[in-house]
Amino acid sequence: MADVLATAFAAFAASAHERVFPAEARRRAVDAITDCVGCQLAGSAEPAAEIMLKTMASASEPSAALPSALVGRNAYAGIAEAALYGGTAAHALDYDDTNHPAYAHPSAVIVPAALAVAPLSQASGRDLVSAYIVGLDMFGKLGRAFNTAHYKRGWHATKSFGCLAAALAAGSILRLDTATMETALAIAASSAGGLRGNFGTMTKPLHAGQAAEAGVRAALLARAGFTAARGVLEHRFGYAAVFGTPGADIAHLARPGEPLEILSEYGLALKPYPACGATHPAIEAATQIHAEMAGREIAEIRVGASALSFDPLIYTDPKTALEAKFSMNFCVAAGLLYGEVLLSTFGSNALTDSRLRALLSRMTVVVDDRVADSPEFAAAVAVSFSDGSSVEKLVPLAKGKPSRWFSEAELEAKFDDCAKVMNDPTLSGKLYRKLRSLDGPVSLTEIAAATAFAAARSTAA
Image (cartoon, rainbow, N blue to C red; front, side, top):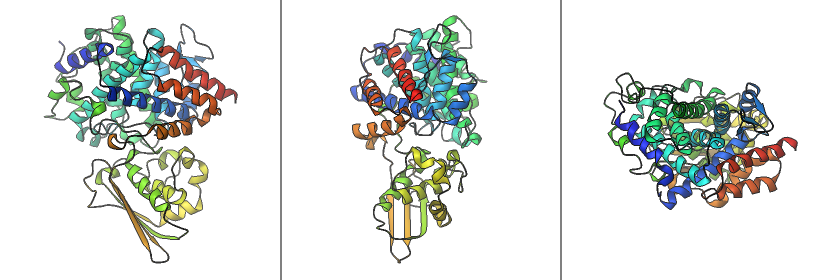
């Protein structure tokens, strides 16, 4: 017996390619997909991606057994493994976008899942945009129903919500009908999981890869006739019972697209910095102060943060790049010292920079009453200088949020930063332009292959 939630979202996804979504929704989806591919390119050079590639069967040319391109690599793999690799690479640097209701990362799951199944379909770039909108809708609405309790219990929703979103996106690309899509959701639900205790390690980005893989595998199994309890989302021993909380309001989940998550106030946020989103307002405040320092020596730093920010930011004295991405102290110190926080900021030089280490010893991070209840990690950074002067900056909302969306120039600048691993600005520019024209009849397989071609040039460089 199917449940209301599964039926509603399955029908929504099954008809995604026929739906007329608002132009602004489609524009934001193209931005998010472009941003995610950039993050995958950059993440492909990270140790997590390197190690994963060693465990996979892959080849330099596509074949029936290994048809799916690995973004950021001159390689092809099996469909499910390509999704696993793609999701892990997309989230490896924590530069990928977020959905605030879920406290998690949707595109790192949805985009790799959809790209991985491209060889099995005749889908277009426009179909990918529609599938993305549908996947994000379920991802965010699960967050609105289950959080903050789900997050506080230790679940990493990138995986626990992402496996369902990935199943919808992959199923939409494969043109599954409503009944088959319901089965795919039920199969994917049994792969939900992801523990926040693994934050700051390679296993955090692995959660994104596992969710993408689970969604793809669920869609493929359902298409082949595999069975599952289609009522498992609302079963007394099912998904909502395990991952939700008693009394959780899931009724609105039966109305997908009302409103569209991608157009909602907190539905999607691009990341201006390659670190945990809870650091972003504080980083922006720090870079603003850097611009006004005029050579003054810092004597003391006080960071006033929201209470919620202390949950993910668990490192005060990070020893690795992954730990530094979850350190308010490191990120603020970097913003003050360098005036910017880029991918290169988390290299070994910064981690051992004596100037940055000195700033860590002068910093206090506390809950600030002005921003304590902020759902957007608002932060204030106050700096006292040795000459007795001081300055404070308060940032209520980070760049990249819906009301502070990236400009075209900002999106391209971030993509270029990510695409430096390609060692070819001309080629990265070509790939960027191809992605910007995604919402049209261009073949999805062609898009996926273009990312592998880019990687081939990178590997040879």
